[in-house]
Image (cartoon, rainbow, N blue to C red):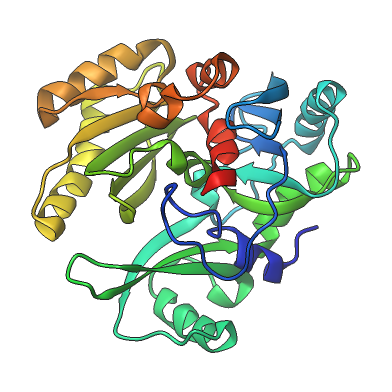
Length: 325
């Protein structure tokens, strides 16, 4: 089981986009990555090159088997999830020290302004916990916290902070442990996908997983907006207007803060209805809209990696790119 201290050092250490500065020490980068979501479990083993896929497997899980939440128990049907994971490991053998990707709703992400923040982790952590107390709906003393620094538009200090409840992370880790595997790195699936975004101008990522919609805006190497929201339906029946209503505040905030508009939009997780959502976004935002699989980074990768992305398994591919972050 990954200890809280390990999680604190690793969840953001990959970098948000390829040129984002690392912090703390160099992290391990397991070639085996596993994703547990509300709809499926999957694993990919990568070779030494970007997009060099050696093995892959995915299995659907029953509706309600995993119910992502930052507060309540997540793994409602552990036997079903374990059974699906066992079948995946039958094709892509599991091992200790893998990378584990968990649902976005489990990990809350904040961009906090600071005048100063101590460099020593043991001095910075109490300050961050104090700042987070009014922002998270749970006791911050029961959480793991990770952070990195970035410079805001005016050169001011911003601290990108991730927080999650220890006991919820352990639910996902226990599935792996019961099958003789274990995690060396734990992070949310959208954070794993971010290296696929362009690192120039402003890019909006609209990513759907189950009923969760995650909205991200990066400005060059800066994370400007990150929010994950439970929607009334999944991508198969969601009204595009509901998606637009959710992302408009993020776009407005970015425009007010950075005094610039979004240059491009990348979308993922909308399945067969992706075209409908792309057209809705293009109409409203008036900029190029394309699948995340069509990003500049994705286009440099091999056909196997692209196939995963077209199956809305971009987090597995993004993890592979993190090796060069």
